[in-house]
Structure formats: C-alpha cells, structure tokens
Amino acid sequence: MTSRQNRDRAERGIPEATVARLPVYLRALTGLQERGVATVSSEELAAAAGVNSAKLRKDLSHLGSYGTRGVGYEVEYLVYQISRELGLTQDWVVAIIGVGNLGRALAGYGGFASRGFRVAGLLDADESIVGQEIYGMTVEHIDRLEDVIAGHGVSIAVIATPAAAAQGVCDRVVAAGVTSVLNFAPVVLTVPDEVDVRKVDLSIELQILAFHEQRKAGGPDGLGPLDADETPPGTTQYVEAVDA
Amino acid sequence: MTSRQNRDRAERGIPEATVARLPVYLRALTGLQERGVATVSSEELAAAAGVNSAKLRKDLSHLGSYGTRGVGYEVEYLVYQISRELGLTQDWVVAIIGVGNLGRALAGYGGFASRGFRVAGLLDADESIVGQEIYGMTVEHIDRLEDVIAGHGVSIAVIATPAAAAQGVCDRVVAAGVTSVLNFAPVVLTVPDEVDVRKVDLSIELQILAFHEQRKAGGPDGLGPLDADETPPGTTQYVEAVDA
DNA sequence: GTGACTTTGTGCGCGTATTCACAAAGGCTT
DNA sequence: AAGCCTTTGTGAATACGCGCACAAAGTCAC
Image (cartoon, rainbow over all chains, first blue to last red; front, side, top):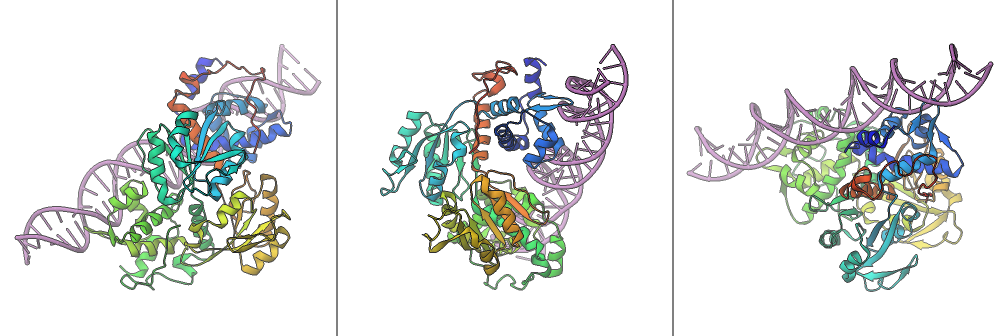
C-alpha cells in the first residue's frame, strides 16, 4: 500500500457522518491506549464506541487501509491516522467570547488542550468580569477582540454570549479573519459561505428527549392528558414560551 | 380539517430528522412572536431557522395541515402545535448530577425553565460543593440521588460529572426509574433499550470544525505541512492524545 | 509449506432524508 | 363573482447513510 494509493482512497470526500464519528473513535482509542492495549478488532472498537462494526470498518476505510486482516487495527497507529485526518496533529488557536458560566466551563474543559486546541483569549463585555483570572488566563475586554484574533492568529471562535449579542460578535470575528465558529448561543448565526458554523444547543437536546419521553407515555394524540383540537385556533390558551 | 384527520396525518411516526428540527423552528417562532409578528410564510420561517423552505413545509406537514395557502402560518398557533408535539405543554422534572462549571451553567440556563423543564435537584459527590446555594437551589449529596428522583418524580437526568463517574451515576438513575438521560460526560453510556440517551460533547464539535478548517487549508493529503507515509508504522512519533 | 481460522474491506440492497417542481387551495382586487 | 396572485402541501427524483453478508487477505499452528 503506497502513499499514492492512500491518497486516492481518501479522495476529496470523507462523508460528513463519518467525520462526526471519528472523534468518538479517537476517544475510545485513547482509552484503550491508556489501558495498554496495542491491537483492537473492529468488533471491540465498535462496541467501545457504541456503533455497528461494519459501519466502523467502512468509516475507517475512508481514511485508507490501516487494518490487518485476521488481526485488527494497531491502536497507536490508528490514533495517529485519525488525529491527522481530523487535523489534530497541528495546533488550533481558539478564542472564547462570553465568560459566563458556560464560557468558564469551556475555558477549563480538559478535552480542548489535550487535542491541540489552544485557548488564546477569554473575552467579555461585562466590566466586572474583565480582569478576572480564570484557569491562568486573564479575561480581556471585548473591545480587544480584533487585537486578540490578529495577534494570536485565532482561527476558531467559540461564542458563549447571550443570544442577543451573538450575531454582532460573530460578524466581528468573521471580519477579523476567523473562519470557523462554534456557537453556544441559542440563535441561528448568519455568516458568509466560506465560514463554518457549528451549533451546540443545550435545550434542543432536552426537547428531543421530551418528545421521546412523551411518546413512551402515549403521545400527544394518544393517551396523553390533552388531545388535539381541545384548544382550537382562535382560543388563546397557548402555552407561553419565552426565549432564554 | 377534523381532529381525526390530524391524528391520522401525524400517524405514529414523525421522522427523527424532523423532530430534531422542531426545536429550532420553535425558537425562531418565539422570536417572531416577541416581535409581534402574527403570520409567517414558510420562506421567511425557513430563512430564520436556517433551512430549506421545502424541508420546513414537509416537516410541518408531519404535524398536520396548519398553514393557509396564499397566506402562511399563524405564529401563535404554530408555536402551540409544535410545543404540544414536542411535549412542552407539560412539565418535565429534571435532575442535574455534577455541579462543576458545566453543571452550574446548566442550572442557570434560561432555556430550560422557559420550555417546561423544571430542575428538581442539583447533586454532587464533592463535600465542599454540597450545601452551596446555586440559583436558589441547594446542592445535595449524591447519596440522596434515589430520594430526589423518587421524591420529585424526576424523569430526565442530566449528567455533567467527570467521565469516570458517569456510567455509575447513569446506572443509578436508571435503576431509580429515570427513562431519559442527557449526557455531557465524554463517555459512551450503556443503558437498557427502553432508556433514551442523548450526548452533547463539547470537544467533538470543535474537532469537526478542525477537520473542515484543515480542508480549507489544503487537507492532510494535500498541501498541508505533512504528507502521508512521512511517519510510517513502527516509528513512534505519533501525537500524544490524552483524554480529558 | 500448507491448511484452518480470523478479521478486514466492500458490493449490494434497503430505508430515510432532501430537494425540486407543480397542482391545489385560499385570499384579494376589481 | 371572477380571475389573478401567493403560498401551501406533496408526488417524484435524487442523494445519502446504514447494515448484511461474503470474498479477499492475512496470521498462526503444526
């Protein structure tokens, strides 16, 4: 298996669904690595990652042929290959904007530093927070946003501000040259095509769970306490749902 | 349009992909509601939610025919219908286990209370945290987990503990009768079939961004600083990747 | 060196999701 | 009241993702 063949195999397209699972495999693999496991079969790794083994093998096949038939995969080598594919063999410079509870949690999250993400700055608009020391970093004023981004070469911005401030902050980081945004604010951000945005929404996941929980209990059109058409259009007895 | 027809249309299966988007539509709609908008077209709402308008219409059609041709959808009525479908017209009792930075952020998250999620308890194993008052709630010791779940009728558990503690906590909440788990710990939880688990992983999202960021820069097999086979198997120059 | 055994890599069929494009439906104007 | 205009709801086509099942490939025992 030559380098040429690997490159051809990887082509220019790893399916998004596969990319989203690679970090999960990576986590399972580092766990095995810590326990001193040198080799793992697709069956074992799939179980550890919570996926089907055929899916795992197909996912890995998109990176190239890194297994040995009859044996399995060498853990250390696979860790390296996945890391390289995900871009974790290089450092990524991150800025966290919004140092509330969530921003603080993110600043101290071990999973960042261990995977090549370096937090270059914490920024907030609140004067009473600016200057505070958090995990060895001093919170800077949001006015310095452009300086921090340019000065440290920030390429990924993490937005953990209130919803109302998010789009404004997003516009500024994009204008300053950031090309990837991780958004924790509960709003849909508008960005130019060349900028990637991913969103993590704490309450959406909970709402999806509520849906399934309700289904277990009989569903809204089934055995639930309320049935359709009990509050017909015109009657204003709707649930009050205010945003965060 | 009768109640019977609505019920038939909704059948027993709303696609998962649709369920996952309903909270996004709901958020966009409540935003419009606050701005006093009474009616919205699929085109406008789709733009606000960041999706294709045909997809939006098909999603909504799974709930029933709630639009008016030539006009659009009545915002208030649609908010009610989506809320009902998601199960947000009833209260869900939630316990948060693990009151570190993240647990604190979750406890104070406005998006919970406003959508029918009532936090009935904050629990932690750390004696120095137990007894602290957070957003009006007193942190209880993890030993009281079963009491809190049974006493308040908790049906959803939010796990925000360190990775090592997560599976143990999960087993306990499931044994105590919880049927939905929202997991923030970076581990794959094992649960019985009838229990739903959803996972939110802060660092996975960042890794996916890194992948795309690398692609923009040329990719690992393209113009990047390193090429395949520069570190062949056997040479141990792999990146060290330790878990959080 | 040979044969039995294990495990990978993948072709294939199936179900789900997405998007296009348009007929049906309703409102509005004159 | 008639016709025009807007917008929904959905059939049809396409793309995507998943998992089975198996041939190919490699190891290991003897």
